[in-house]
Amino acid sequence: MINLVTLTKEQMRFFAGMDPFLLLERTKFPGVYAIGVLDTDDDEEDTPVGLAICTASGTDFIIEWFFIIKEMRGKGVAGKLLDYIFEMAEDGEMERVCAYFTADYDRYDVFSNAEDFFRKHSFEREVKLGGEWYTDVRMLLKDEKMKQNREDPVAVIPLSRQVSYKTREILNGISVTRTGQTFFNKKGLPGSYDPKLSFIVMEKREITGALLVKLVDDVLYPTCIFAECEDDLRSMLNAMVDEARKNDMLGNEMHLIMRLDEIDAMVEAVMPGRRIANKVLVADVDSYQKSSYDDDDDEDDEDF
Image (cartoon, rainbow, N blue to C red):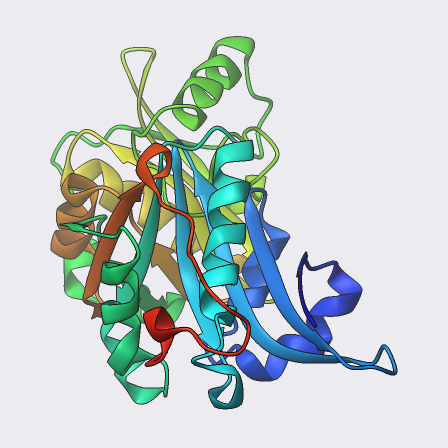
């Protein structure tokens, strides 16, 4: 019998072998969910046979990883998992479900047929949601572009200082809009960032930029980026590098997953690192047709 369950922290360790990108670590952020697929035998022993990792961001429910082991493909399991995801999206009042692909997926067994599977199951539109970046703080320190800045620099203020009510109110406003968000942030501000590594830009008493960074297991994850120009973003990144140097963090990795193309272009102009191309297929929650399948035979997902 196939069972699907939203995984607890204790259950996740049984599914770690199905997660080549270490995406289970992202469940430490608000709005990130891991869904496990279990095959239960007559002795009530559970065997992990599938895994999906999804992020709730704004009105989107983003599938970042979707995997069924070879032995269970063609038996309707993938269809059941997708139905479960859409039920979660509907319960969370999400408007659309997005299947997120990166160029690195072709290294793994899942990629070759995954796109066909999603296109058969209501994912008919292809859109862009920004890029995915991998770098480390040391690269930022050495890069010549990071040393450039505007002649009249703006005030870069660390959030480790006492934050005024007005500043906190504006940060809350950023958190509930699409402006500058990454995949790791839905509504979790303030509180979903490390004050020492996070900064705002102020000009004439107005906040014109924010770089909010969360530290998880020695990896820096920007949860929100907003800037009016490249120089302001560069100023905040330089301030973050200085703080990282003080705390002996120059070897730490930084992962940045952008959801807006305009912010993505700004990052590309400022920040060195490895950028991964992506593809996103979209399905509307209210138009999704639940899969029709039989546990023993399902041609709809026979290739998955």
